[in-house]
Amino acid sequence: MHATMPPSSKIIMSFSFIHSFPYFRPLIYVISFFHAIVQDRRKYGKIGWNVSYDFNESDFRISVHLLNLYLTKAYINKEEAIPWNSLKYLIGEAMYGGRVTDDFDRRVLVCYLDEYMGDFLFEKNREFFFA
Image 1 (cartoon, rainbow, N blue to C red):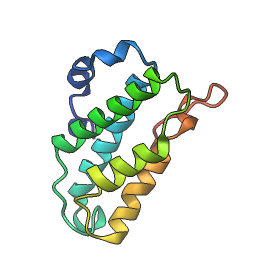
Image 2: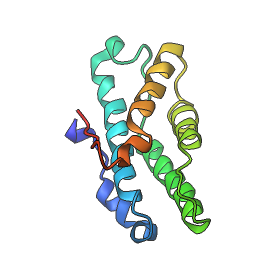
Image 3: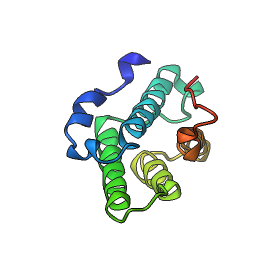
Image 4: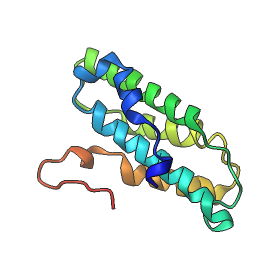
């Protein structure tokens, strides 16, 4: 799976926003991990995805750009809450989900985002680990 992870360090450094908002770097990792999982499932044919989808680097880059836009807006407006529902919908239904034609594959994609994105990522009492 490491081979399918996008070169996120180059993408992280391309955004000047990284120094301002503390949640940006962990969320880049979340999107990188999600992208790697989505890519990795293609290896397994019909067991991975019911239909073969052409997920690529542009899906990842657009998702990172979208994350940057939403976090910049939240930082400028001094909002504490991250708009999880909007981010999950746009990444899961529009960016990646726009390619998905099978309902079961769409459910899997949305389920991954529900498991990987949320306030639980930043809880101090219970650390979140990708396993």
